[in-house]
Length: 556
Image (tube, rainbow, N blue to C red; front, top):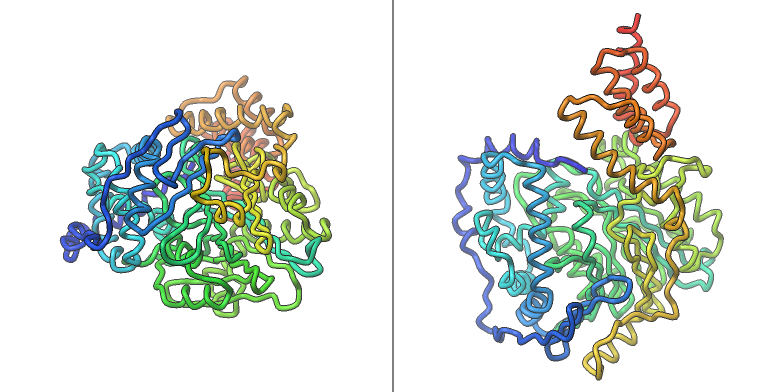
């Protein structure tokens, strides 16, 4: 969907000769001598059921993988790798194949490898030894097919900074997430409730194998998080003390060196914080290399706040007595909100639009319940219920989410969406029961609290949904035709637009095809039509407007 490496490759040319300091990082490994490095023996009960001691990996009927792991850092890492072995290798293949698709030139791939080695040269100094050890254990099960990129351990470490690196170098909209929290008079029972969409897209195959991980560490607090094979960082999660974390990317400058990945920071908060003050203290002691909003929910405090971090600033946003918190992709704390980059983000991106839509839906849904939270996360319309076209990034539900999730921290309940996007069944888990009964199961069964699940979205059974899935295929074809400078047929254009008629891009891309063929009057009509729709960002709207002006001028 995005091509993140143009700027990265340009920078690589400048950095190839600045490789001092990479040798030590390339040969670094965590100290593991104090841990038991016995290779786990995994028993396979079925193609989707694996176990080793108290630890297990099972695929439930909603096609979510459930992972339960306990022990010290090395034991956890080895166990995660052993239990999810084939899936781990598959996920790594999916990720690196995606990079090859985006960057087919072997020369540019070599430059990318050189750059990553240099850029990540201090990464190991900014990841706690505990998590390096866990990553090291997992890396023992990495595929040897990608050793040319980096040794298995370093490659696994690099992948934990992939979100941050892409975000920092290209300001990518890989994560255009939306989240909210409500408590007191804003929730049905007065206790805290949170919801979020994690709109991370790295290809359809990447999102197929979601993992709901339940981790019982030898030190710290047991916790759950939604992740993918090989990933120990936290993007969405809750611990057994009722602390929740979710992350929303903000506007960042380009740093010259990798520091602590955001997902590692949030993992540390999950494992060691019992309240908001402790979460803030952990966040303050880590140096990050991108800007991010971290929504922290707390059962102890019965409220949520935003911890806003950047490479050179730190802020906390607390709504006080309003009992409602909304977060998209711009900052709100006094420390960061007036930053020029943040102000441009508000003006030019779709962050403010999604923020306003979330506020509108929360106002319309008085006294939030988990069921209402799920409905808000699934909402596909714009302000005042304006049809945006399916897949528009101005929607809360952009129909590309890796997952949607709802938390009730006081009750230790969490609901996680199943595929596709956040439209599948929301599966409930009760952390009180899971960690109380851990290691006591006579049989390996799903950990879900099935009677509390929410059904799949009825939208999945509609013609509009089927058309949207067809549209996604046709949209990729349209991009390919434009890139290869091949013409759209009349039938293709009509069908393409009919599949998603409220989406501005279907008119813009057909307009580009006419413009390239010098059929300027027809191009003008398409660009005019695109401008009647809700265009995602200000720069994109300006781009359409410029093409319209040029088409009018050339059609005379």
